[in-house]
Image (tube, rainbow, N blue to C red):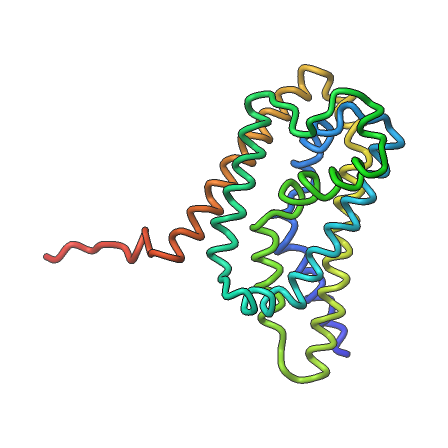
Amino acid sequence: MDARHFVEGVFLVYAALLPIVNPLGAAPVFLAMTRYADDPTRAVLARKVTFNSFVLLMASVFIGTYVLEFFGLSIPIVQLGGGLVVCSVAWDMLRGADVSKKSTTEGVQDPQVVATEAFYPLTLPLTVGPGSISVAITIGANHPQTVRSFLTASVSSLLGVALICLTIYLCYRYAERLARFLGSAGTAVVVRLSAFILLCIGVQIMWNGLDALVGITGPPHVPRP
């Protein structure tokens, strides 16, 4: 196994996914969506979100292309549909709606509720959204054909995704410390700003999908002399 190519592959996967996943930016949103949970419950949610994110990203890398082909879907369609979901969640947060739909701490501590909320909306679309999935599918689609190169790329993808998920866990697990540093007013500002950015990301994802489907932007127009 080529050590240089292996290390480059790990950092390529990490660098490609980190700006899209953006766990640091999502941490205040995670805290706001789990504000009725106590610290132990939030720790459980952080672990479950990390595990769910790892499974989703690895599945996207290794079998995402085949799943899309089986259902006759394309990445632009995934971007368009997923962008709608992201926009919906972000819009609820901008309006101050309780996305978690819980009003008591006991409700959030219920194991079934924790498991459900850990997947939607905390994992999908907050942490691993359509943008992350499409990037992961693209990474998997570009795997080389030789056995040795495939093994190198597969292991590097595994470690790259693992590093992303470790970053997610650290940011979510210690989101409350960040909130204490910012204070209640600062946290509210960051949450609203993050929700607006999330809404813009959702619109951008939808636009990218729509543009890929119908070619809205098209080639730049050059006037004839």
